[in-house]
Image 1 (tube, rainbow, N blue to C red):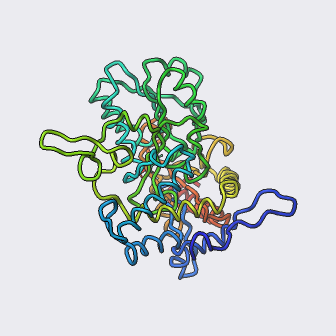
Image 2: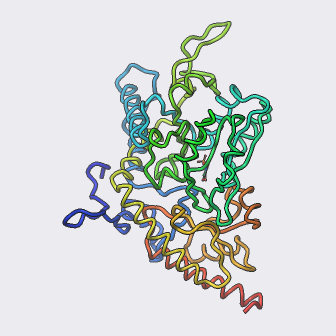
Image 3: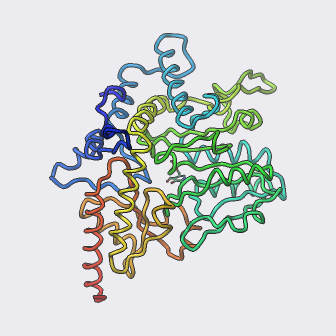
Length: 433
Ligand SMILES: Cc1ncc(COP(=O)(O)O)c(C=O)c1O
């Protein structure tokens, strides 16, 4: 079934209008892995969408279809097959443009993922424009992918990094923003949604404040783009990055949105085929963006199969996705709060997206994850690539349950029962009870 002919997975609006509800059981049937991994009758309880989302059949089929019926290198051949590939890649570029409400498809670059996109900005923009004494403003919430490239750029240019602290409940503490964000600040780089606490920072407010001192803003949308509509023009975002694989799309493809004038000013990071206008023995000139930043062979099939992933979430509808994930989030908070010795990290549900991280008294995060796995429940444990955040939390590791469109209240129930059982088993064996 193609994205355009598939059954609607959101119930039709009730008479008189109102919000469509997402039918998660029907959505699950769109994702082959759930049937494939439930053959023993035990449902797969996949609560690690924050790490990577499962794929709907439309995405899997499209990627296979490229290799089976419509494959050639992109932007190389004038023959029909090559032209089909070029058109399909440009179709995805236009879908991403529309998803983000960017002004032009030329502002959409394909990369290998969020990490690659941030490195591209830190090198292509940072190394060219940062000077000694300049400041880069990050938040304590950031994933290592939005820290380490800036540390590398700072080291190379003599710029320094400042940190937006957190409130006790894990939101950005903006009470001293005017001291942190000054004319020395050249870029603010913040997550659109924390991959651990679920915190959603006020991106538009930060963009406004950054622009008021002449700074730019980069939003790490790895977690936020799959959960909520984004409008780079309304929010005033200069750079926005995300990964296809967290948006129910293929691995190996990511996006960098950047305003056209920034792409004109930036240096390319990779040199090679496709990114040039001219090459001579004494030097080369660059093509215009996006080609300027897309040297070499692109992840062709992955880019093409990102399009049905985008259409899939758009068809479900952001309002329906939001309402569904909010229901799961609230239920998880309510149920986990009743488990003895369990502490949820981060803010209340109204300040966060569909991620719940927690620790349990006297039980390691790894033990919890291993014991839940025995019950078919997939959660992530560790520092989740956020060591500065875990230092701030004063825990070495946490357990994370992250939700997607295919999760149900049954998944929440199985997680909570599993955690009850973990607590009873380990507390007893350690003589705590
Ligand atoms: C907030 C955030 N930023 C960046 C990344 C890195 O994404 P990728 O590994 O797809 O480059 C992740 C991945 O978990 C993330 O959650």
